[in-house]
Image 1 (cartoon, one colour):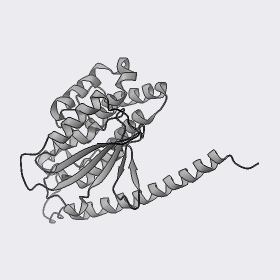
Image 2 (image 1 turned 180 degrees about the vertical axis):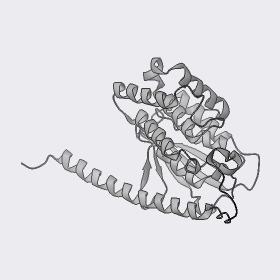
Image 3 (image 1 turned 60 degrees about the horizontal axis):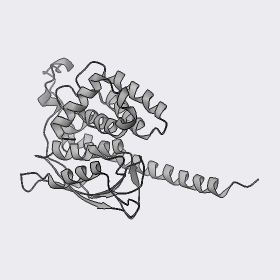
Length: 272
């Protein structure tokens, strides 16, 4: 029995996506290697004792380094007005003195009308500009489009290899943006990746029951702490806040008080 045309088309689409993911993985591995080579610290001399992990200061872990302009490229983000990528606005404000994340917004024909929430977001992200001149710049073209929860970032229109999911877009930008905001430079990078994966699932799980379970997992990871990033707003805090804001209509009753405090704190700091 021959496969139905729908199944054949789905198989072709899946094969294409797998190929794109493999290419993206190669790009990210290459970028990570380059960043580690550029940021590799000098080895201490034999007479010096290595500092203990507990004695490492924040100035060591958050060392400010020049932005590598070779990693900065303009890109397009396709996003649904029902799943607003608040993380872009957060990074724009967080990086305001280091990198100009300049955003222009357009509406695709698949969207007859923008929601009030999307309009407010658009007004904020296009009007908020850095006061310093001559900052390194990334030009972002945000297109409101019917892509559902799968927000996508396109860095190469000719090859069309999208980065799917807002969380993965934040990962990408974290690696090529200001070094002090790169989550991979922290000691707890494995746990951070686990938190980011959970945020991705929270947005993209289609079943409300599944979303509730993922939210419970995310809440347990936060525990009783004030935020995932300690005293400073981290990429995990931004990703979690954006994810919860996207699902809060369906899960409002399931957001515990401590998670609500985190959202309020992040919103106050970066205005999302």
